[in-house]
Amino acid sequence: GEDVEQSLFLSVREGDSSVINCTYTDSSSTYLYWYKQEPGAGLQLLTYIFSNMDMKQDQRLTVLLNKKDKHLSLRIADTQTGDSAIYFCAESISNFGNEKLTFGTGTRLTIIP
Amino acid sequence: DVKVTQSSRYLVKRTGEKVFLECVQDMDHENMFWYRQDPGLGLRLIYFSYDVKMKEKGDIPEGYSVSREKKERFSLILESASTNQTSMYLCASTTPGMSGNTIYFGEGSWLTVV
Image (cartoon, each protein chain N blue to C red):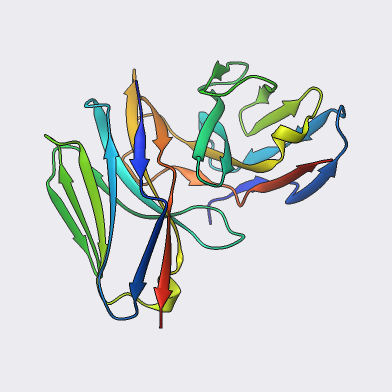
């Protein structure tokens, strides 16, 4: 079955790096995603990684995937106050070409001035 | 600009009422999804549809039904609303064989059942 887990809270000082972790159980995942949700808003896709990749970098964001341990992480360099949000990881399972997303519980990132 | 529109952002309904949450997408997507989001539980899949008049149960379908009469519209129905259905509901759509960045979400519908 599918299960995606994250820590619920993370606090980081402004300017430091934030690392948000996620574990998943389904080894047949095709893509893994990171979404950001600001207060009162919907979900914004931040970045994604194909399951046969180890790492993806996009400006301040670095995604690391350890497929053996089924562990995904999102590193935000030089964390800013605008990074305060809930971050969701999600895994995508393909069902005869149709994708279905399973989300984690979300990690609330708080920035300490 | 692509869009998934949820017609009602904020609703307050009474216990036992029938509630319709509407979602419309303008991208000609085949696949549409309804999730609910609760603190500490993340997003949980209620129902999804891969084609018109087709529906499949997600992880938490109890107390809900859906309707997909037209490709662009996917409705979530609460036949008899209960207080434990107070939540934020998110609709999403995508196309089959998506490449990883083609799933789009609406802005959410906040439902309070009193």
